[in-house]
Image (cartoon, rainbow, N blue to C red; front, side):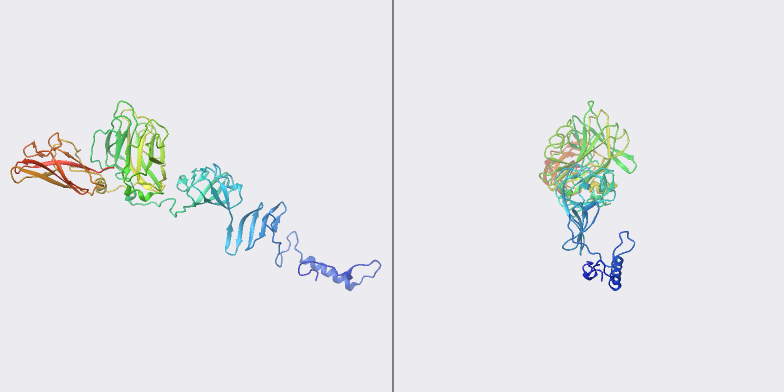
Length: 531
């Protein structure tokens, strides 16, 4: 044979030619036949014929692969203990093992531009907390898997850093991200998995209870206040904050398609001022969103084109003990706690929009992640600059929901919303009557008729909903300017009230004064358990 078992071809010593000797055909013809066979068994460099057996390579190493290239000697394949690997530029890129393909993880520090093309590795552990706005330039189709060692912000960009939900992402330790290069420095996220297992984007729900705000469509307005001072409630669950003076709140009907009702705030002061509306979310209705993403959505309209800001705030102190006046300095343009906002609050999300005058617009994108210590949330919508007299701000369909995707607002049944509101505030007056002394209305009042002369009286009020806590009670005289009982039958006051028994379900009010037998003795009241 022309080659030994290890591929070595050796001439026998008897075949060496000697000058002057006669060539023996039997010897040399056999050698030529072996040479011919050896050449036939060789692999043509031009690829005219294939291998007929295995191609055996040296084991090689990561910086000197066994199968390599003439101009890239550190790129190619080499043998490993359990399989073989692919090296590029002397770095291992991928292992091929009996169990499947495996990639080596390499560390890369976060930076404003975290250049993924600076390492050939497919799997990268990103260290550090520097916010990332770009991932560098790589050929289109390149895929990378990132695992985050720390919390940082991935800054959304509609062209260069496309993220699910069209919003920035705050990472957590152990989160993973799969990216694909679109070329020209543009990248798109094709998968994001949180270490906690929670979805990055909460699935949309058509359950109206998922709106953590109550009366987001401004259907219920029990107080019916004509003018409202700073830090006072207007439509149920909503209160106003003003920079200097009162504003007026009213309800609009059919202000926009899809919105049967809307809130209007009118800046009624001669001097320009900033103002806004807010709602505090009760702890029991928000604590399940600890360490979760939430989004504030809604519709707004302003009578003049000026900036309107919206914010999600977080309270981490004592449950349901929240400072309602969230503004520390109306004139500040630094929207952080201790500057514009009151100390002790966390600003979860903040956004601004300048709508066209007298034109409805959606809230700007406003989503963020609550902390693990969340006890209450506050939403706040306000004028960024001062508003002139008669400036109006209209709001409707305001919602605070889990996730970071805006979903359609779902109008709730009016009776359902009223019951929700009455957990915080309720009244004996008819819904169309504002609580006030001397209303001239006895319908709905707590009333009794003493059957004997000179009797004292008492009446009870079963609240329509179990209240959030034991409420504060305010009494109203139906026919007088004080807060006393009224002898409606005889048109005279019937004594001062004494609230004897009160709970979150009911209250009892009486008077020690002697009454006229058979007279209708009445008194109105409100019960307030607001945050």
